[in-house]
Image 1 (cartoon, one colour):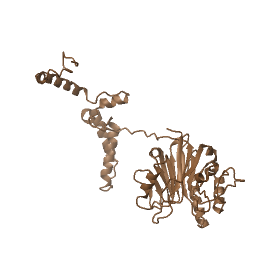
Image 2 (cartoon, one colour):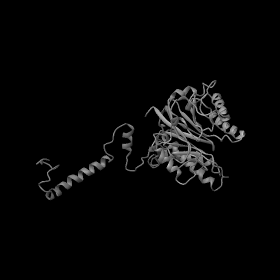
Image 3 (cartoon, one colour):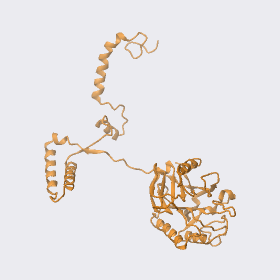
Image 4 (tube, helix red, strand yellow):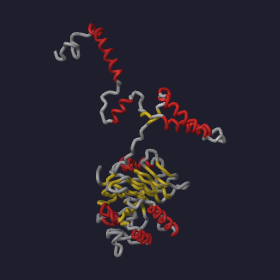
Length: 379
């Protein structure tokens, strides 16, 4: 797989319109991406959308706020899990190389919000950070509704000098938060044209409020950053994409062997049958007579299963009944099976073909010489 991920964030203003998610999927197809964080979804409910490519934590009843993540097919296979912390914060963890990746998507309250709401928002992010394994690479991305300008004096460790507009109170709060958690604001690291760096112009200022924060020690891993004004979903925010040097790694899930007790041994082997009966009698005696009509049958069933597992050998069960035990053994020995027909079937087929040849010969024309005894395949 490639060593660079393409990730991003986008404030779509709302997906609470019939077919808006499909429009988002269709629009984003034009851009190569792995994970896109979505802000201001305005959906209710939590979990995965059908298909598993979109996850969200929404409000219980009201259609406001909301964040989510749109995953590519490649990213879906590497998703370890996600945690919908609140309607403003969601985290997702991915299996990547050299370390696992945790992405935190946020949607900050507007500058007009009360200070208590702002503090509650940052508390949610800190809660997400405390739940993240220490070795993970952490990216916090989304609409922060904060302005911090281009002046980075005394803040060189957390931001570059390519910001826009003038710093506001929310910008001060963000830079303090970044310094406290050793995060770097990636947007300000790259000098580009205004139309490739601004994220939400308001007609007066070239604002940069849709931000990407990464741990300071990994900031050099972010190799490119830009916005795309051509992405259109009726929003006054631009799509933000950035590249990071990481490799997605498909999770290795070991297939479970499908086995079941070979109950035929109870009929064929006297010792096995006696051992099974003794084990079962012992387990049945342990069942309390006070169990009700629903619990008692379940306990008896458990006793039978345990007795079988303890005394009767198991056999591999193929998914299709026509695959023989011999075929499964050959597969375990790393042999390529030539045919799934057992040896008895092959012998019977050969006998039938030899008998049919004597009767079919007179009905075959002279021109049909191929694969007939004493006849060439070429005229």
